Length: 137
Image (tube, rainbow, N blue to C red; front, side, top):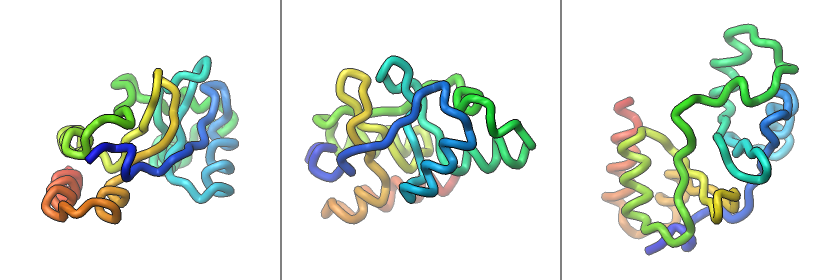
């Protein structure tokens, strides 16, 4: 099975210059927990609601600073639509992450979450392994 068969199609992204405050507002309006950050339409990072709370609000950062301030240096974990579910699951487990950006030519086209795996695959063992590995973190 491929990522394209279970991923959430479509994704809102923000430019690297967008403010932390505006990204938080977008997340609230769209009821989403993660947003790809792009530069020249190419994904360069992923910011989560948790990143905003722990790295900006709790640290009393200026919320009018660019979202790029919250990007970590380790890059972004992404897969393509043709990546197998097994490979995507391996990446999630290895990096202890619950979602992956799905890209084509470095452009965000969707997201794959552990929830997508749980709801759309018949391999409960694989989903359970991913969840247990992430929760150990």
